[in-house]
Length: 383
Image 1 (tube, rainbow, N blue to C red):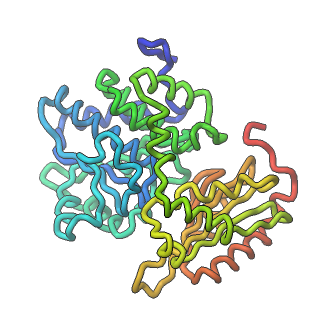
Image 2: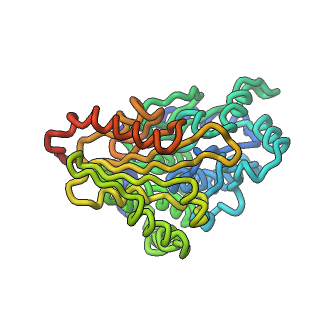
């Protein structure tokens, strides 16, 4: 295990592909691609944004040192970015919401991209309409050849074809894989801003280091990042202590009026209507973390959040589901089997296209059907 000058190990997930990173480095040195688009999934979280912004900051420095030239970089989000992530280093410079671009500008940028990096997702369907535009761009040959596509992700079952893949479902966060990219290409370029982005990504996707995915390697990496001067109290405050008054009222309302508790099924879930969102003026990312309250109830092993995200003037209903569990109960399998989704063993999501009342009834039917799977004691993830 290699160590740095601070004596702290640089630890990578077991399945990270350093050979793929070296091959990508050689190709970039040879072709010097000018335009990079780092794409994050819809409703981007801290892992996606932190990892992508860390790469953007790193590439700017790497191009200056190794290619003696500048580079054009955009971190592209298909949906609005939560307000509490705009403080991240590089966000004001590189982060761009698709909705803020004209159709012409969006199409032109995607078509002229030389390198696409897909960060924290592995299916183009998670990009809304942007996914089709990127698929078309990847099928188009430029003067220097077809665009390069790179995947950096830790979710199961990748469905997107890429030229290079840095993927491991064993990683607690995409941040671990992104860190491996940076240290493989040139660890001397990493500074406090880059480390802050990676730390934010790592902290948010491990639930502030309390989820079962928090391994010794996660803590080793966190320690390494702190050695660059990252301020963990500031990062935590910027993300979790920035609730607006109406958001806090919304959480209280949901727990008081929208929480369903089914002790026999060891389940608790929340049902939030579009009217609830409008009433409390809930914006992008302001429901993030709400589902986790369902697991704070004693003896609950399955939590869920159903939110009506149907767009105004759209006739097709869209209900987003977030699923959480404890121990050995795998919600990713439920998401794939019943809810057109996927994710991790204890945290997954999906979508249903039916009215909210029907979606809740369907969820309860699934609960009754699958309940025998967890009639036995739920074991700890460490058992």
